[in-house]
View 1 (cartoon, rainbow, N blue to C red):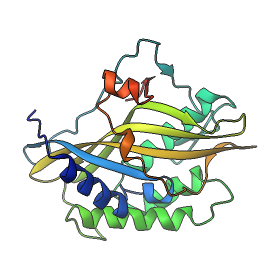
View 2 (view 1 turned 90 degrees about the vertical axis):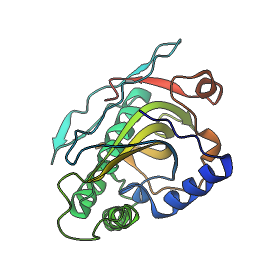
View 3 (view 1 turned 45 degrees about the horizontal axis):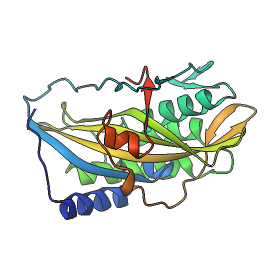
View 4 (view 1 turned 90 degrees about the horizontal axis):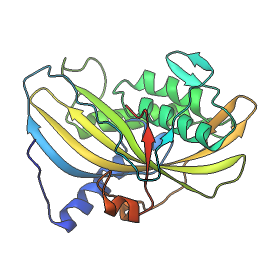
Length: 233
């Protein structure tokens, strides 16, 4: 893989531009910051890469399964910190790994808190914006090789109580297009609320997350508060 290092100002301009359009349907659920960190050409239809969770000296947080499965989305995660992080990881992975507006809307409706009734329409609009950002048709069929994949690899927590907390995720984001693969690091924040049906995503609050961008598994990431996830694939 060829590593591309851009001037800091260029990286930040790119991050702001993508954040404004949102990454897939994440506009419906969280503030997102992306920065380019690699690019390479691949044959049409090449497989999308996956990233393993980096190690952590303190031991990674082991993700736990949800007890419910609806339309391919796991829900009903346990009432614990691990449950909240696991739910955020599941929901944002699914939202960030689709280019189909209807699918994004379905995921958002299953994941969103009752206080956020517009999550479905917002998610669909976010996916359309991402298609346009990638130079793809806003509606209809996509080229066979076109896909996106969001893989959370590290986390940290903010504003935690037993029933409400903010889960920050550092993730790898891969755009697979007919002629090339582009990879980015990104940061997103998910506000999680406990309900009788398990953890749910609340409407996102505006936040500047650019200072938290870091390379997973490095000392720099640890200094910024990032901790490893287990089973984040």
